[in-house]
Amino acid sequence: MAPITTAIFLALASMFGFGAGFVLTQFGLRWMLPCLGVAISIPTSTLLFWCLAPFFVDPSNGNLKAVALFACVGLFFPGTVALLHFESNRLMGPNIAGALSSIAPVFAIALAIAILGEHVRGPQLLAFAAIVAGITLMYLGQVSLSGRSRWLLALPVAASAIRGVIQPIIKFGFEWWPNPIAAVVVSYTVSSTMLIVSVLVRTRWTIPDVDHRGALWFAVVGLCNGLSVLAMYAALEYGPVAVVSPIVAGYPLVILLLSPAFLEGEHVGLQMIGGVTSAVCGVVLLLVT
Image (tube, rainbow, N blue to C red; front, side, top):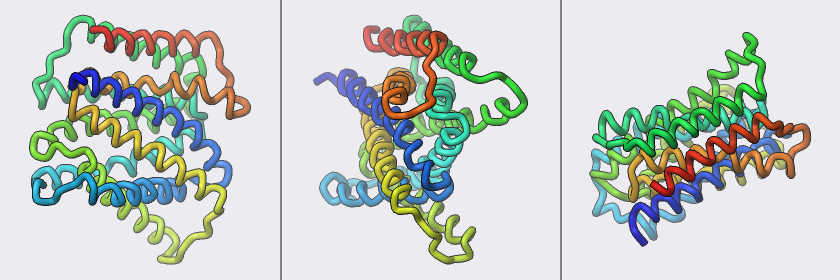
């Protein structure tokens, strides 16, 4: 399989995983607040990656510069991004939060051009514009731009900015150590440590009460999102950011398909459908160019 085909396949797998994770998060939020849910979700993924590490990571091939870079990424991703996603999901619902948080390619491609020297061709720019237009249409069709919604807008946009920035940074780190499993092990371990310590500090070093139903759902979300991040990192190893990032950002389509079936009260109107259609057309254009 050609590297670019592998990258597209992995990016699509990541897209489906992120979309499913957004929908499943709603079940966890019924029993647990985001600040506690994220302290269960991320460590669950971390445990999975540590179980995989002995089979896929050879420390003798490691690079300290790459480890340091992956650790720095872990200060912000996935922990901070997951917390922002969970909170925006709780306040806005998965359709709107997912649509807004999928503008990461804006930041990813800009930084990829700056630090990796990637070139974006005309059809890719058109596809990118279709994705951004679709996401904007999805948001404007669902939320009135009141003072509150402008404040809420900051949550998923901040998550998008962080996730968009880390994609070219991770790809840059792969020049030193091209191992996606190693990248997630290091970054997730740093994030998990920060999240667990922050929860203990807030509870004055006592173990908080945890609803087992919420904990189970957030553990499932953690596995779903963690595997999606792993697929995204693997896609970045094989393909350019300008191709991988917009495909991964197509996960609002998955949310749109799943939320009416699993969640009550998630309205899907014509403007939302039009926005998703535009975004999907942009992804398809990326696939054929």
